[in-house]
Image 1 (cartoon, chains in turn cyan, yellow):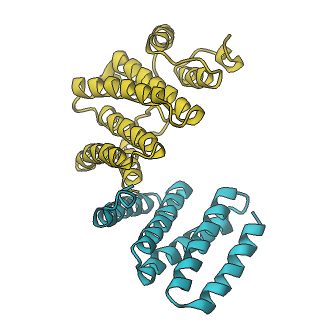
Image 2 (cartoon, chains in turn brown, green):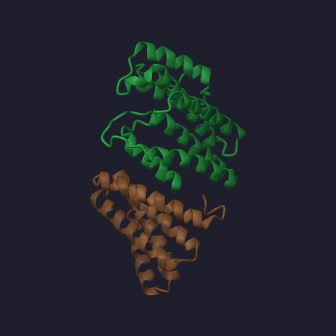
Image 3 (tube, chains in turn cyan, orange):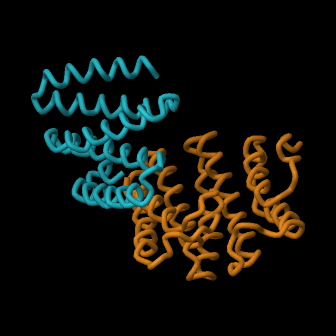
Length: 121
Length: 180
């Protein structure tokens, strides 16, 4: 929202605060799929925010973390479509970030995995 | 005509379902109608799994606020830009603000106000009113930050009307979503 109204610094601060809270919740209930899902989705949002700020290299860590989170959720819950959808979203966002950051080979390799994952959804 | 699911046993849980049924059936969740339904149900069925110290009136009022919120959200979906949707959200906000003022130590009542600001922000955002939406989120965040600073019991279980039961977690989850 803050990004949409051009308040990028405030958007960064809001995202960081949200991240703290999701981490706190995930730490309190490490077995909660809901909190893991929310944390991973928030990391996608953070990656997209940094891309909007033309900070592709900074977008990669949260998107890699999101990918790891959703990979684990899909592995443990292969019948839940939402986790697979979110994994694909994380991977596609990461492809964009890798490509923009100049890591073309990594982006191509990951895009193939994202497509394969999406086909299984 | 009532939706079929509204004919289930009338428990406080089913008041929640009835509100949803009314929404599905396209029946306006007018405050007076909901208060009437709610009064009858709460007289017949003692509230379970909700704090006894806030009393039936608060719970009743909160459910009404929740019903009005649902009505507002139904309008969000049916008519994305309908001015009516915001009217219902404003009514829900007024109800929840009153409950919050009357029960200043009740974290759920305070958090309900933040939630309504969040709902209004979503609607404003969908209408393209980003600045107004950001202002609504600021209001929600200010309430949420005050609540997470409170020394709440991390293990308490108090069922709210989203059927979630741990205020310590609920207010953090809501605030995180606001910051998203």
